[in-house]
Image (cartoon, rainbow, N blue to C red; front, side, top):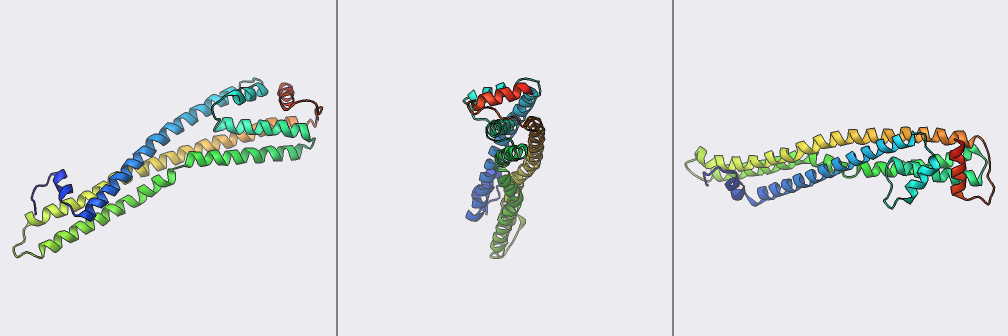
Length: 244
């Protein structure tokens, strides 16, 4: 057995199973870091857009004009903008077709809750994979270590004169698997905890906005004013926002 303890040599001289474990852990680490960078970028953009939209919403401007601006954008709306767009569109339709405030608000809340659930799913995507990598990588690395040490002692038992130089390389290459398991697991666990907290905070902001927006629309629905049937949905939305 070679006594060269350089990292590359230890990896190349490891058994096929230990090498497979190392390759598996390396792949898991690459996937983990890809998710980390992708999720970090997504949450920064979504949080920034939510803050910008909240400032725009509470600036005292015309809500129907804000809705029109969002509708004319070619980009897909998401997050708080999507919740607002869905709620306001449902309000305009319900305002045109019914004078029952309770029915109107129930319909609006259902629509916004569906959108909120979808947005939450988007934010939480791949977090489960991060948690899985963080939880199983140390055990996969430990399996490679146990297998490598077992092979080292098996080979050691087959010779007459055993020495540390004979068993040290095998144990060292086996322990590399444990180190790689920890290298894959630690960033994944840290990122999962951090991003889970950020997602919870964002969803809480969405829920608070939805409740506040519902209150604004409820004040209009309580007027029980039914517009003429000839008026379009946009006209109803405009007249409603102007009244607000």
